[in-house]
Length: 307
Image 1 (cartoon, helix red, strand yellow):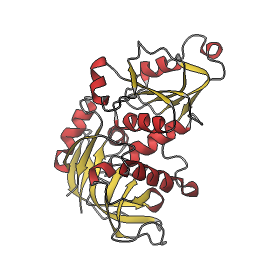
Image 2 (cartoon, helix red, strand yellow):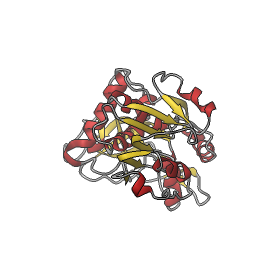
Image 3 (cartoon, one colour):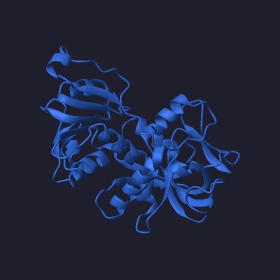
């Protein structure tokens, strides 16, 4: 089958590869759409040449799981390829515990933008516990995860602020008229929960803005620079915690991944969240899109049409 594989120079190229090997709980999906995300850049960086990457999967089940779990053959599904990847191919193996049917009203493009970003946003917000009435700050608010995190936090009853890199980026979030936006130097806090999607100096700034007994949940993967703990942080922010969040953790337990994906699909179908796909392109353009993403020229979510 045809697929995009990693290269020695940190990009991707087309190649003929074997059909994916599947475990008993994995579906075989004929892929129609995926996305380009920052997670793909990290997959390329940490993978040997020749690996098929891609985290978001949309398509039709070609063969159901051998153990009978998950959607049946012929079902249009969306799912998260987790640490395995492999969605930038004509067919992909998808864990049935991370795959759900797509409502008819959802387009492939919208559905493709939900699994990876949506699960990450939910995991970051979950670190803050009960959010009703809480003050929540989301850094990197114009990115794919950030846009869903601010919407999900608002639905949970939080007072939400989105941190943006410059005032000009406010226009990208203009449809959220309920959202307060700030730059890092103008943010004043304190915030009960800070979901950091940037890292580096922004994470350092976030630590200085967290409330007593508050939480800074770090999913940071935008900048490689280290963060630093502000002077006397432990005394100035009593009981505050910095926690690392990985959206792959616990998703197979007690059907959590399926429930969360179903929730994301339902909220998108009803118009209560919008992943705001900012572009869609043929997978023939994947290498150019990855280069643009590494230069931070892509905002929001870009969908790859797999043909």
